[in-house]
Length: 140
Image (cartoon, rainbow, N blue to C red; front, side, top):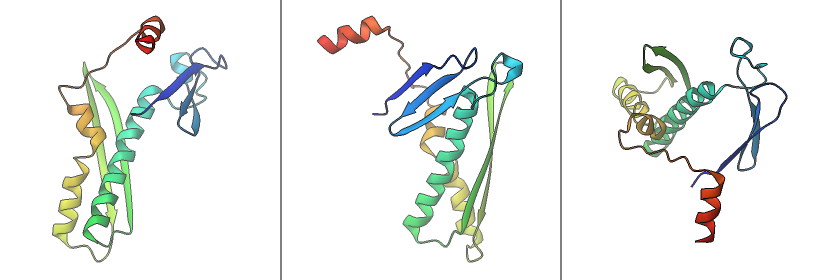
C-alpha cells in the first residue's frame, strides 16, 4: 500500500507539500492557472509517473533477459482532446548490441507498465471519504 500525505503550504493559492515515504516535494499550478509554479502540477506528476514507470519497466525487463541496454529515455506528453485525456509516450532505447527483435520486444514491454495499465483499467476504483469516515474506520 502506498500512503501519501498532501497539505497546503499557503506559499501560493494552490501550493501543496507532498510527502511520499521519505521523499518530499512541492506541487503547484502554473501562474496562468492561479498558482506560482512552485512545483509540478497534478497532471505534471501523473504524466511523470507514467514516464517513470515506463523507463523502470523497460529496464527491469532488459535486466531480466540479460539484454545490453545502455540507456532508456522516455518522453511523455499529456493533452486534453475534448473530454479525452491523451498521453503520448516516446521511448528511446540505446544499446549497440541489441537486435531489432529485442528492441521491438522492449517497446512492447514499455506499453505494459503498471501505471499505464492502471490508467487504462476500467475497474480502477477511487473512494473519497471524509476524515470523520476515516476516524470511524480506524476505531472499528
